[in-house]
Each structure stands twice: as C-alpha cells, then as structure tokens.
Image 1 (cartoon, rainbow, N blue to C red):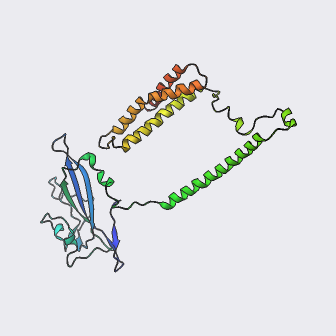
Image 2 (image 1 turned 120 degrees about the vertical axis):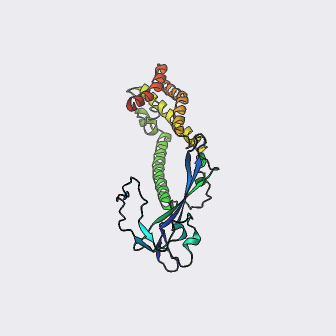
Image 3 (image 1 turned 90 degrees about the vertical axis):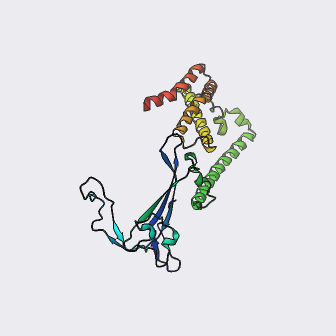
Length: 304
C-alpha cells in the first residue's frame, strides 16, 4: 500500500510533506553461488524534515558531471543544506532516526514552497530470511494494515443477483404451474378425439441428448477438451493454494499446468468417448485420438 506522502497536524490543521525516507534493504546470500545476493525485503520509513538549503548553481540532471575531463563522474550535488541533521552530514555514516528529526529546534516540512527531498539507504544482511519466504510477511501481518473492503459494491452486486434470480424463478414457477395444471386436467371427449401436440417441458425432454446434425464427433471432442482444461485449472489452483507451487521456482506454474494437462488426458478421453457413444457413435477410438491431438495440434500451429 506504499507510505503516506504527508500528514495534517491535528492541532494546527496544517499539511506537512514527508520529504525524507529511510530505505532499509535486506539481502540474502545465494546458496548455490558465491558472491551473489538477492534482495528479499525492503521497508520504507518516512519523515518530515525542514531543510534550510541553498540550491546549486546548476541543478539540471542533464549536466555533464565530468568537469575535470578525466573521464570520471563527480558526485552530483543538488543543494547545500544549511542546517543538516547528523545523518545528512557527509562527514559521518549515521542513519536517520526519530531523535534526529524531532530534536529541539527542528520542524516538519510544510507542504508548500520549495522542498528538498532526501533519502537514506540501509543495507542489512538477513541470513534467516530465504528467497522462497520473502512474501510471508504479507501473509502474517495480523491485520496490521486494515483491508479496504468495498461493501457498497458488494451489496449492490448481491442485490442485483438476488433480484434477477427472483425474477427468473418467478417466471419458471409460473410456467411450471401452468404446465402441471394442463397435464393433470382431465381431457374431454373432444380433446381426446383430437391429436393434440405436446407443449411445455414435454417439447424438450427428448431433445436433451439429441445428436447435432453437423458433427457429433466434433462436439464430443470439444467437450472432452473442455473437461480436461477445467480439471487442469482446478488442480493447479488447489496445488498453488496449498503451497506446492512456490513463486521462487520460475516456471513451476507452467510446468505444473503442462504436467497436469498430460495426466488428465484420461479425463478427456472418457468424456469424449462417453458423450460420443450417447450420440450413438460407433468410432469412439477415432474420437479419443482426435481429442488427444486436436487441442495440442491447434495450439502448436498457432504459436509455433
């Protein structure tokens, strides 16, 4: 969530800006390689410090810093601080702390006029924090940062879902009651004499498993591929939620998806063969072969 850019004093109601930050960067040595390190965590501590400073003669960032012509860049200087705190004095290597900022005679920086922004970098070696555990601090903060839940949007969405569901349920119940009343009504002699067509739900009861007129095998293959991809996505999400797929291992998620896709080929074959046989198909072996080669073949042609 970042850090606040400033604050408003409760007594004077004046706005102040955080113009100094402490950047603490923690690093961990790489176990498999020597003289190499990885950044595993960083924290930001903001302060508001009023600097009395004199701008440099030329504070343009594009200015060539090689003034002597010896091929080496000189330290770039933006301004000269008249009243530096101990950490801003170049003669020592102290880091900024609370006592320095709020010592007697120091004031916070108002959010107006010219402001000098400074920072302090602290490098800390953390041998206990491994690369794979660098995100654990965000999972175990015990609600240190309150979650911003958009209750109004959630309530609005729930109301819309309930209203639409109630409307659809009312329409369906009304049609069902009308159909049941017509089914249970005793037919008169005239109605028995006439060959009345079926109506209502009886019109579709025989069309549920009616094979398509174009290609029943193509529909079965698509359904089998969809079942395979759905199962692959479900198992990948479950393994990632249980912690088996660590973000520290690059490519682990992709490899898991490919492996699960191959292993779940049996699901695709079963769904395809079962659905194709429901359509009174005879060449179920051909259908399983197509489901094994169809989606991978199309993906290979498109991407490779």
